[in-house]
Length: 324
Image (cartoon, rainbow, N blue to C red):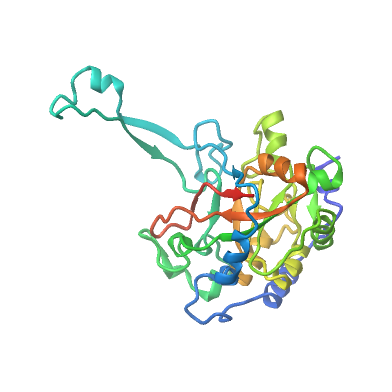
């Protein structure tokens, strides 16, 4: 059975339908013509205080994959795995390269990496459709110097709030969802209800498909850019109506692949990221968090998930921390 044949929850969307869905959920100007935060505006002070009240055990769980050469990148879209270099190491010390320093010795290092090669957020300036990113800002705002609108650093004090995990493999009673499996809006609601949690205003929604676990068990294959389970276009209604602030997943691109249309690549990015102002987090490692949530049946927590504020970046890495 092919991935497309497994994609039974989806229908074949046309570009006109994607455009209509985008227009229906567009929030351009909702927070003003200069807004660069979109749905992150829903994470206000009250939302953060409520999220902090969810800490019961003091349990801290990272949702980041390692930033190293063992990652999934294959060169697709010019992305490669992070490369780590030492500029000063034990050998330099042994050979006397630091003899000019009185007493103290040190090691130093450098990382070379595409900013979206591991666990990362997509900034609004990452995706354009018909020449515009979120809130209608045009291509002229991203140059060889980086982004001047919708850039990563605008998110540095956001994305700390209530995290909600939807664990679809456990909900479905399987190890993982198969590539091409589309999660629809009703699935979001049903999974949340089964886990005894609601989806609400300002939430950072974490979608576990099990795809990362599958690839770790069977080999990376085409994890970075190939077929995967994920959200269908139909989920846009729930995400927008519930005023979700951000959506992250354990897949390369959050949405189901193959995409539900051949006429628009990554159409849910167009609807939610570009039009509704909902940022996407990709390649989150949700395995340990899922096990912890299943152990006590609590699927909400404080999530601290701000990206590193690389100036002008269109996406970038983070170490998302769930605190239960």
